[in-house]
Image 1 (tube, one colour):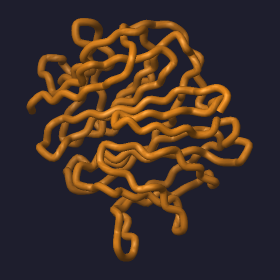
Image 2 (cartoon, rainbow, N blue to C red; image 1 turned 180 degrees about the vertical axis):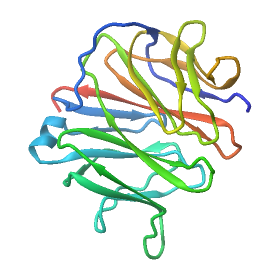
Image 3 (tube, rainbow, N blue to C red; image 1 turned 45 degrees about the vertical axis):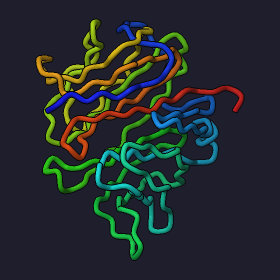
Image 4 (cartoon, rainbow, N blue to C red; image 1 turned 180 degrees about the horizontal axis):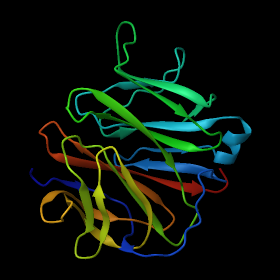
Length: 251
């Protein structure tokens, strides 16, 4: 598998540290989200969503041949469509037990290709990752809870392995430390609290010997929670994209 390079144009950095973190799944402030494509959005605080009896859910599309992916939370409510390597804005969900159905943008009747029943907690944030199955044909999804830190002294990083047919992945800060070891397909690693550092992230086989892909010009800021998603592109090469979240007071 050839190495691929994706630029992560942020503003600060990454050296592993063990410090304590102040983090709660329910945020006191609104959250601003920025994507690798330059899009930005702001969602209400977890406290405000809790008061309304709502959870907040967004969708990540890791399927190369499915632009216009649509997820609905029930027969009447469709979330905004999402293209490959994109993340939607957070959407408020009123119910706690929800069956999410995944399908492509359709001209006729909605025809879901995958369903996922989940228990959501009011006031909490979730990311739903839609991916291929190991066979590269079917679809599956996984929902992970987003813990947006309010610790302004550390950067916070997680990596989601959504690349079918790729074995366990180790993430290394080039010239520095190993950040995550042996991330399995469909799994997430982190959030991990790290000190500022900038450079290149390498995605390697579990033993660290073979380079699968990389992300150059990485720069992570304190007080920001970063998600990196790994997937298989159309040429069956490891690809990566990212988005970031930060609590914003006064919104």
